[in-house]
Image 1 (cartoon, helix red, strand yellow):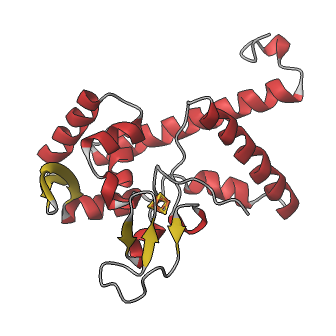
Image 2 (tube, rainbow, N blue to C red; image 1 turned 90 degrees about the horizontal axis):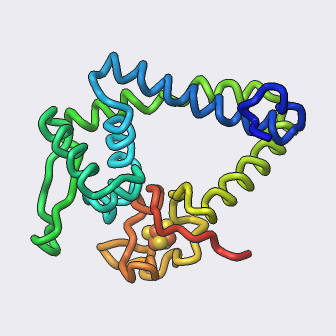
Length: 205
Ligand code: SF4
């Protein structure tokens, strides 16, 4: 009973599944259209946004490969292409010169800023729904994402504030950062707590 077969698309589950599929098609289309304007591939667009919003510790080829769900070699190729366009640069990590990090150049920062609105149309459609429908949709989509996450199809990146490894104001006078992450066992400066992290685990209430 495939939801791709219109004859079988007669249950809420199959109709919702195909609607979600169409939303992913819309996002792919939006990324391609924006890519034509910016001369960037959808993967390059996602990489620039990753480098803008992920915590600095994962700004590596491995971190990029994780985010894109690709091999290390593919992520390295994406980084090469962005470097040729002078949108990113490879820099050794000050604390460990053997580790190479990826950093947006000023041109890359400006480009990433111009890409931030790519989901606006979808957000506008959601915002047009009544509040109660938005709340129900939020619960439903979170449950679907959680299922897909457990199945290993998607990685959820979130910021620190509701993470079980986050210790707020653990060392308020430490110039390296007033908060602490017990996962990496390191201080967290305030701005970094608002970035996305692949190691986020929701705190239990
Ligand atoms: S593991 Fe949690 S606390 Fe640590 S950086 Fe990631 S989100 Fe923040």
